[in-house]
Length: 123
Image (cartoon, rainbow, N blue to C red):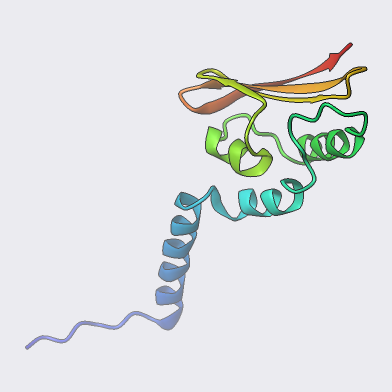
């Protein structure tokens, strides 16, 4: 019986890390998406129609300053920002409306990937 050659422990560890990173990425957007989700999802309350939307708008602005979603899969947006106020096959819309104005972010989609983001003032 022929014995297999054992690779160095570092080569084995490297291979395991690649496999683990791949599994994390396919299970929920990867470590970067999960970190953004933990930092912002609880701070962004979607569909607000009260006068107190400033915390959510501030969090959404901070998220957009930190993360450029263009090219990301739609599931990453859903993981980080949550359920949209409105959606179509080619857009996800997040609206923060005080009743006296507010903001909305529109994520344009093509083939379930973000192709652009537009921020609009509600007047």
